[in-house]
Structure formats: C-alpha cells, structure tokens
Image (cartoon, helix red, strand yellow):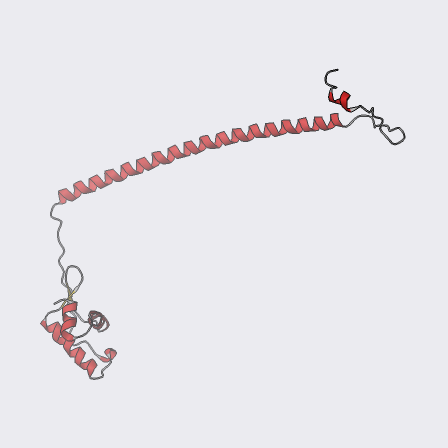
Length: 174
C-alpha cells in the first residue's frame, strides 16, 4: 500500500503517516520513485503507534518497535552502452558547435563596437575642430566690433543727420 491508502485506512492524513515514519525513524521500504511502500507488518506497526498516541503517549516517547531494514532498490544497468556513447558524442559535438558559434558572435560584436567607437572618436575630433573654429571667429568678431579709438562726443551727444521719411524710404535708389 502507498502512503495515502494507509492514511485512509487509519483515518489520518498522509502527512501524519510521513511524520510518524520520519520522526520515529521507522524502517519503511520505498519504491523506485522514493515513495513509501507499506506491507502488512508496517501497517500493524502504524496501528500500534496510532493506539499509543490515542492513549496519551507523546510521539517522542514512542520507541521504534523493530530494527531498521536496509533499503532495497534496483540499480538498472545501461541497456546499450554503444547508444549512450553515441548520444554522449552527439552532445559533445553540439556543445563544441555552440561554443564556437558563441565565440564568433562575441568577436563580431566586439569588432562592431570597435567600429562604432572609432566613428564616435572621429565625430568628437570633428566637433572639437568646429568648436575651436567658431571660438576663433567669435574672438575675431569681438576685436572688430570694438574700435581702436574711443568715440568722441560733441557736447555729450552724437551728431546724426536727420533724414526725412521719404528719403530714408527711397534711400536704396540713390
């Protein structure tokens, strides 16, 4: 019987059965998947434990009734070593191909990034040259705006010729 079947038989939960087995270190057999497998003796032992608990005995006070059995399990031999070797060879070859592809992709990306960095460096050089040129032009224009000699004002005012509206409007003709 499996754990859930024994639990139904005793009227407890499957986790209670598992807890009893683990805490009392009961020597229960397991199947190939690691699930407990209970025989008639195991069920009688669990019924005895259940009776003791119902009579007020604490789980820690219950001593295991029988000695531990050695676990029985089946280790299967590989049926076809040649087939396993072939699969191992295929997996090894695939891993080598994946690693090679990954290396080539990484190399390509590095070269691409290097080209982009070189392009950006060239753009920075061009922009630096343009900024220097603009700065030079600005400095020269500041020098030409400021006269070498100061302006002299007569009586505190600058003399300007007054133009009438019509001559200023048609001044471009003359």
